[in-house]
Length: 98
Image 1 (cartoon, rainbow, N blue to C red):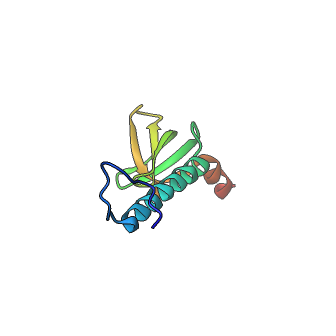
Image 2 (spheres, helix red, strand yellow; image 1 turned 135 degrees about the vertical axis):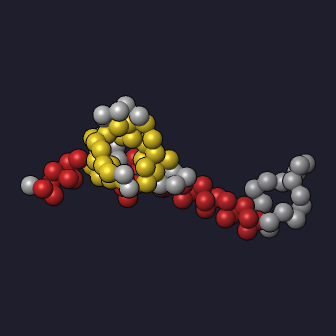
């Protein structure tokens, strides 16, 4: 068996399947974060839609734990995380309207 972790502190019969599943989770999170960064670039102008209405803001970061985009509200200055499905790039909105 090819074990990455061997020696003191590691159980001789630890689950390689669990280790591989954990590696897959980390790889998926890295891929999600890369996709969020490409789809919602830092400092991009965005239009956020939510259950209380909508607002315009600027992308300030990303959260790969829930495919969320961190947005600073242009009107209030508040920063919060929004599901990517609620966030639209302003240039996309302009193309749809034009």
